[in-house]
Length: 290
Image 1 (cartoon, rainbow, N blue to C red):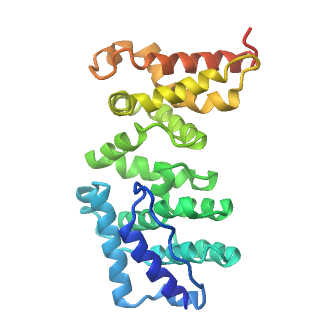
Image 2: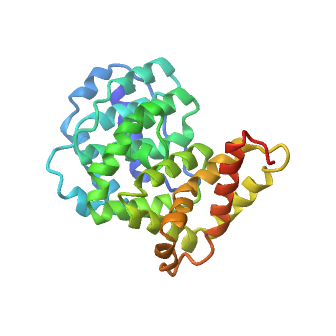
Image 3: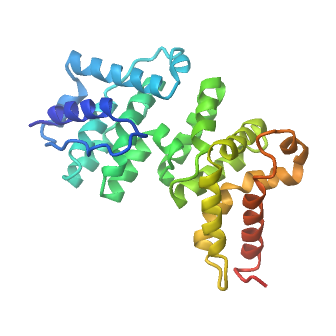
């Protein structure tokens, strides 16, 4: 079995699985021999990558945005697929990811995400998972990046997604969910706070959608975070949840009327804002509740 064979099997798996599917099987595994053949794939394999990118656009409801893209899909998704399938061969898989070119088009971005996002849960090597996430800017943006991938994720957000209603809708839909991990909470909270001045309405949209669609999940995270703020307080547990609410807490200080004008916000945001303020005070006092 060659790297091309492995990539084909993982591409087929990616077509049948998306990052939101529950109980999905692990991606198939294979060898990484003759990886140079991935640089010039046969026409049918290149066409499969094009289909995967189109399906990813449709699934994420970015089809109208992607339709503006005139640059073609490259072979990078095949290298990522091979690396996913060859994950048991850590050194070779890492070398394969390093050979992935930066996404040159939105079609590349979509194809990379379609391969990487559903595979991450099955990558046992944190270093390989970080490399895969860094190679896929949309995955990094929607999940959370390793430091090396932060810039590309932010550029994708600012230069592409925020320029189109579909991209803005995707950010609202994904970012309003209760964070799945502390790292994700910190990343999303940081981005929301960065956007607070330039994209105030979008940020409020995210929090309003959170309270309308995922209130119970967010309140559960808040309760767990507050439970850790006893004596001595466990700021490591509370900080990520609190910082997800940072942008709203600051908007509550500066633009309270805007928040009150949103029918979906009401007073449901107050526990999150109170948590943020409590953590802010504890951080300012060096972790002491006094």
